[in-house]
Length: 123
Image (cartoon, rainbow, N blue to C red; front, side, top):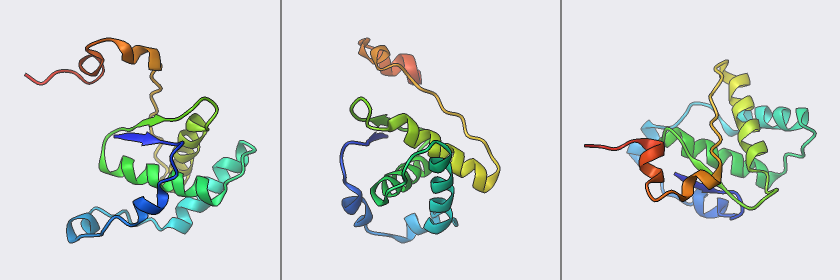
């Protein structure tokens, strides 16, 4: 799943209709609990956790809840790494489980068969 930190689409994301199938997949953590963890993680890095930043972090958390990974994209200095680090730290502080983060050099994605190299091939 691709995740663009430069596009403020949080309103569109919030309008996604809820169905019984997606309700069954909902995480029992409420936004206030996640936000508290995110604010603490941001403060430990001397970052300001704005409403828009918190919404992006919650959006990334939702995407990660539906897949085993995500590609976070955005311009240089947009805060991609800090957002992912803070989300990982916040979730670890809430549930006590440390997640694993893998950062891939974007230059590695130019090979013609980069998807196969990164994710394998299905025979």
